[in-house]
Picture 1 (tube, each protein chain N blue to C red):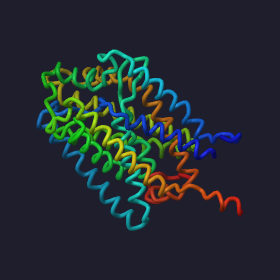
Picture 2: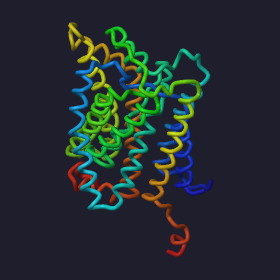
Picture 3: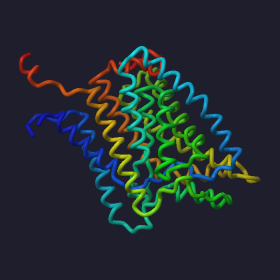
Picture 4: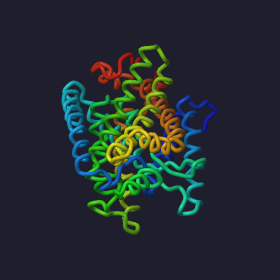
Length: 251
Length: 101
């Protein structure tokens, strides 16, 4: 058995765990938690990013016929990963990675917002996971903040000549942590009422830390391994993103 | 399996896979009340304390085994799409071509 077949077996078993039928609960803000005004505001914030992402995908499709396949693969990955409950043994709780960090490096942040928004919509509609009224807030925290935080940190670190593996690791971890920071801010803004915003934000963020700290590191490792795999096997797949300015200095 | 060494990618996957497996088995053996998601332990708790508890989703699929079925279906479809596209983008290297070369 070749090393690639062995790797494929490992990936298949990991995928079986990914699809194991158990509901996951994590950063998704459930239906009804946000007041109408805040829910509408987050829809308005998310909309231009989704529009920009769709425009990027359409433009890129004309340049490279592999774009739809790549985006479909990454989109399915984001959907699966963001459904996957990962138990954190030391804490005794479950949470899920986001997958938007890796997605942003592979297809760019704009298309990542689109695939994250589709994944969140399906989860809200069929999997009792998140909510339709809170869809905008969830898209902003997981899609927009997660993707652009990963993309920005990766570009910055590559500009400082950090190795590819290390930069991708940091990007994956930052995407996860930034997503939960954004969720904390969303909740605090909507629910602080007459109380102070920042103490509530700090309290919510600190409550996420024990679970998300190890999970962010795990997501960073996954991002780095997967990104290095693609950049080694098919570096030309990343050229479209690199040429569009999304990830400069890939190879 | 032959005696060739695994690639660095595979050696990175093995510890990650082991961790997920062990954690998953541990979770299965635990009390039902433990291993709650952090949306219950954090998001919902904050929301309830602020007087805005979550309400039932538009389509409440969290009934009996319906949600498990939907998770499995979604996972299977998502896994198929991912695998199909992966094979298109990363086709297996042809052994005969390698041998001829």
